[in-house]
Image (cartoon, rainbow, N blue to C red; front, side):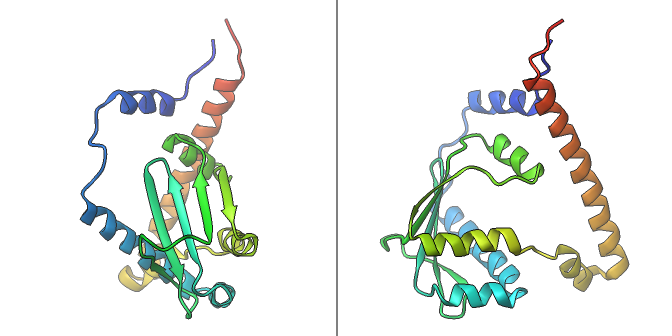
Amino acid sequence: MATQSPFSLLEGFLQNFNLPTEPPAWVIEESHRRVVLLINHVLMQEPAAMERLVRQKGRVVLTQWRGFSFKVSITPAGLLDLADAQTSADLTLVLTEESPFAIAQALMQGNKPAVRVEGDVQLAAEINWLVDNVRWDLEEDLARIMGDAPAHTLVQAARSFAQALQRFAGQGVRGHTSGSTE
């Protein structure tokens, strides 16, 4: 008998659960601001990334997934800023996978989610380079707050948990796609 991933069971439950369709505009705007701050924090730790983005200053990138959209412009400093809603995008990235669980599962397995790219090819190449090469050093940031040893312990525990979850997700996929029957 084929085993079914618990993620698909949870996803089916959430699809049938009637959640509000859209959060208030202020929540969306504030969450976008927080995401931009986090991305800029990570970019500032990678001078090569900022140098690459400086070459694309003034360009606008729109990211879409289901009913959500996120539009940023590239600043002359090589960082990001929220773009005006009326500004046209030079590059549009559309996550084609509808399921948040499938996206999370792909990310846990070290894969990129499926994306449809429309627009400027050079800008798309720069964004792809950023995705492939820029990583957040969470342990270093936590060490500034709580010290080196606790930060290292916390990050190691999180990595162990993530690896266990990744193995679990991988087993669920293999069991679900094996098509074995009793």
